[in-house]
Length: 449
Image (tube, rainbow, N blue to C red; front, top):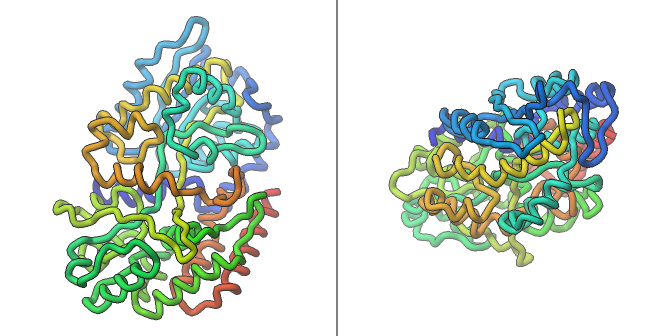
């Protein structure tokens, strides 16, 4: 995987956050077009495909030949008697949300699609998503449900039902450069205290200990901070889904960031770093550790087994955790036949292993059987991510038992950008910084309600 692909995947993987309030603003327009369907309900006969065909829209999730593999996979689908065949259409990430919005509003969109991590939640609020509870029941009946990794279905469940079906994941994990830690004379950190010690040692040899960035359009810095909040047993929301940032655990996390900045472990320029700045820092061997995406070693161009996945750190409170996103497959109420949509989706998640077998995708799978494939097992870092990081990772909702559409507007909003830049500058009052960020999130949620 090249650096451009990795940067795109970082942006795609959090496309659940869409990066813009404009996306959230599009929802009321859709809601005004037609009433929402009930869980598993049907839709307008004009949408979802002509002559009963189930239209599947997919995004380019991998290498150039990914879409070809997807088209070939769909061509192999043989529906049960009386159910429609399926067609494949690749939708580019450029202006993808506008493409979906306009097509769904006019009932000319897909019956089933992949898409951004929180896209299903947003369209569900507009009454355009057909809930997938019956697909979950079918997967349980066939035994396929037990093949999925823990927690991935929960991440896509709302009070109204199962909004989508998981198919791959993007996690925020700790990476380190082995040779630089050895040069600094320190072991790979296992907790916050040893991480701080390692960062100080790296600083002495002219290396950044916690490499990240929060420049314009680059949200990794925010991801890293929230990951550490979750790691410390904190988070952004309470169990009921209300913003709840001003807690002792979160304050302790921001105090830790203040200490890292004061010790020179975080680069002062990180507040303005773009993805390319960060990539250059790693390639130039000026970055020793940092939280980043799966496949970061390939992006850096490591051929020496030198850029490796670390262990989840143990927080001062004895907790472990990190942030992750569950990318998913969703059904729409506008379909020629809801039963056909459900049958296709069940078939698809039982046959999507071909992407990993053909090595056209680098994302982390949600199924044990795919993670056990020899083609996946060849990548020791990805295997470690599945085995060690996925079980302790949580979504943005963290302490809540379900997800909700408001998460879509959080990551890409100005509140997150201001928050991450303030924290990485290291001069903030943690309680005040968290209070300001909570107010920004509450404002977003009010606009969406």
